[in-house]
Length: 329
Image (cartoon, rainbow, N blue to C red; front, side, top):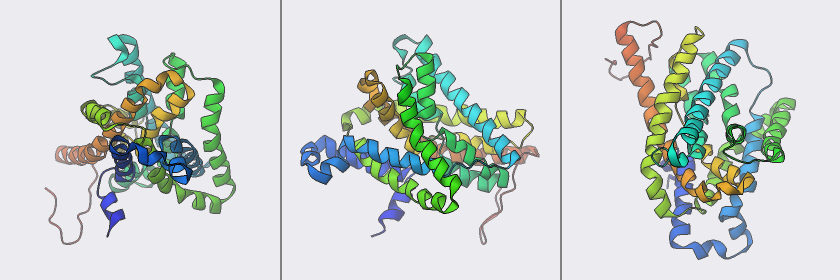
């Protein structure tokens, strides 16, 4: 059986498939997760937090202190653009709309999904449509992984009451990983191997805290959230790079939601228990956005590159066809 290949064939499958299995088990066989021992500790909803902590150490280990200036510039531009757009939309919904929701989307779900990009997808797309500095910018873009910046935005705006030590508690595993990874390249390589592995294991207990009925209800708003992320943050990155006189095409590759963003609502609800009632719905919406952006983001950059090519724009990238394939129109 080719289980790994089947998982990889699904957009965001490493996160989505175990999460959905957790939802199914919790919906139809909830007692199976309450038998005690290692099973309950690892696979029930409470098991997500320690695994998520290990994941943050692994993520932090991949953040380098030394970056080439051009890659650093691009990474900062895209990170700031995505963060500002996601926060502006999320907090705007909370401030100006009745019930603090847009089509059922809360500020928690909007900020979590729109500010957290899929680094793997960005790397793949920038490798095809950009150059080495575009790909290297992912080291800076990795700063938006996880719940920390979402905490900062919602806490500063007053939409969540998050104590200072909660920020420290989230930042510490990331900083620990960063220090280890920069002190020793071998540690960076070693911890980097655990990044994807942890996603596989913390996604199931995340799903085990959700009910299938809530996931279905949140599905349509989640798809809309994904479309908003692709269009607003993708073109936001494109025009931000263009404004600073950089080749802008790879800015579109930022129009995605990372699979690990699914863990952000839980992390924030743990810091601020008043968010617990909307945690499950927000988690389901972010998961739907992850799948939607994984499909639409590559389509958008491909379409826009063809559009620029047709206009004779210097920003277009001539993508080489695979050997034996027909030339692109």
